[in-house]
Length: 347
Image (cartoon, rainbow, N blue to C red):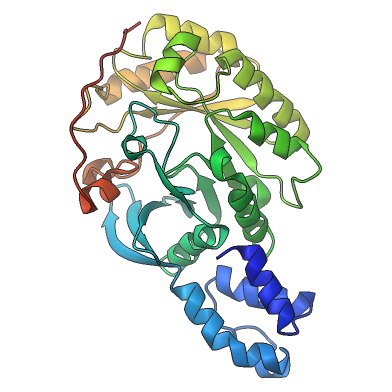
């Protein structure tokens, strides 16, 4: 189901803009239709009222919680089943945040990520994206949504932007608290700067992971061939346009992107920029050769970068204690992938 199709269906049932907004607001905010000051029977057209039970049932069937995996840090990873039997992951984050998935699988094929090992299976529709938020709001408040779960949002941009528009208007989420993540796909920059961006301009997170162009090709083999310099330059343009700082994502992998040359490269790229470096120690996957650095090592790296003029936050990937890094819950619930061993030309 697409949100645009749902809107057209409501209008065909006689919904005016205020009726349409009421029904959508009730859904995305996980509220009953009679929770407002005006009860549906006194407000909505008769044809729409009669169709609401069937519509509500269809929306409820979009997604369900298959299993919940609480973490010691206050997070919880949710394995979410979609109506066709496919599964994605959502993460309840501390401080009322939620990470959602935009694809089943992923085509980018980041070599350190479980999700990319199966490739792209299918797109997640705009309504299925919002349904992840609805599920989460039935468990706890959600005031921030980040598109950093399974999939590359740029490869499903229409559905992602449609979901962002609903979340930022009927969903009541502050626009800067809707964070669109990308590996640096030019289509994202074109859309966010173009006339079709819509009424909601999200914040932007850019997956950097290295300051070296050649290493980036190894780590993100099917990402657009933008250099780290190109990505940061595009980020700076959007920061000036939106007024939001850019979040630069850096998965810290021992012996791969944690050396002195990389730290110098980070300073060269990001010092003085309108951005924040989120440094996340690698969430280890048993079948891969990559290793997670010690917390003490990661903390010293973040402190050094901060002292050299790069605003850096050291973050732990939610779900470390339940082995729930992105894609791992889904992988364990389906057929086990064949083990692979990757050899990198380590810097």
